[in-house]
Image (tube, rainbow, N blue to C red; front, top):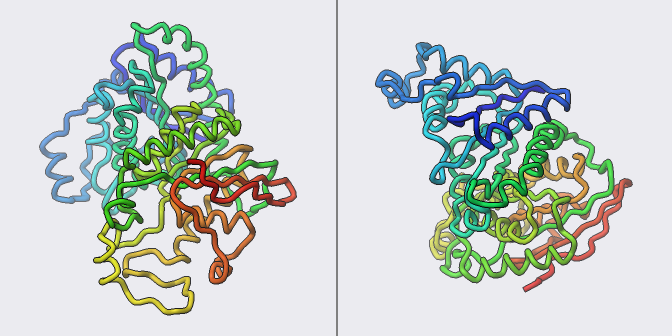
Length: 411
């Protein structure tokens, strides 16, 4: 497997350069390949020309792209994963990397009738002077993730992870105290880059080892209080929701959840913010996934419930797995088919301890899958949890599932 590393830092005399070298060593030691674009050493031109602007803004899929842009696009399409390594400057990537996206993410490649391949994984490794506590307190990490995942990477990779090496300013003692630990983490990130990828996904849903799977439903969101639908409406947590999420984090810490767990979270704000509150207490780093979002209500996403109910397509009294409230919404079958590959993945991969933070309907489907139900079984039996619910499942290698508890309230 091959990783394309986009590295951006103006100085070799930096902690970030050590992260790069440790990460590359991990890739090499795992027997995989890499190709590196060091944007400062390459003197990559990051100012978009007028010609490039007019081409992209007028949606012209012409073949007159600059050679340096074509070279970067070729590196992407010859790789299986893309990795960005850079320092955080004022809650953003360095301007040179932003300019790289401006030019390389051209019309006809990254959007439109795009030629860009769907990558197996996108990994962002950032270095920050601020501590994680401050970055989380002001939602700075969340803001950066939304830009990188919600816009720049969006649907261009099957799996995405954002990791911050925090507190690395020279003004803090933690810089030296955590130096070796952080570089070892960078090495392990490189060594395991392809081990947890969707590449390993198989149709065999019998786990290869014992598993602990914990499901957490996001806590109180603004849409719970203002009479609006959730679905793909991107609502924040309320102040109470943040407190509830912190309580869940403490509960999970008391349950033994530590850095041996892998945390997957929906990328919608209410789930992402719940995950980040949990991370404050467990030191986990969430992997945000679009495929474990709540059901998509199409035109009804985020709408007032009065409008939703007045405008939705009437439903039958009998359960219909293919019913959609709006033409562009997901049916139960659509949601099942979207979630099932993720379910197969977490059973088949090498992770023994898994934490998933998502939404009520999505989690009820995952609970049904874990308990051996089919989609049709939902006509007569289903799991419905309240916001902030926690469920715990233990799975043996013979596929036997024990539900330790389902939809427990821990407030």
